[in-house]
Length: 75
Image 1 (cartoon, rainbow, N blue to C red):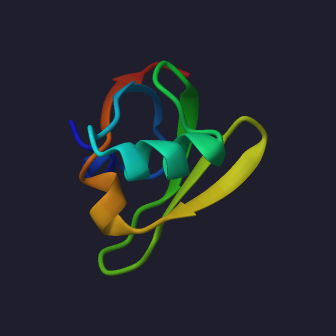
Image 2 (image 1 turned 135 degrees about the vertical axis):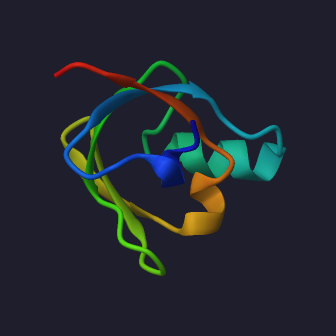
């Protein structure tokens, strides 16, 4: 599933990131890498997606979240 499809309060693992080099450089520099574990904090329509990863709260725009494939895991 895409990151933008995950519901608030769920935990997940990043499975793959987009293939665009510029996107990869930007997204990995803020701490979101393949196999990193995260918690979805807030996912309201037309608002940035809030994700808690590596003791940091990230706000990601919805367009970027469409490029990130994740899987849901039990907490």
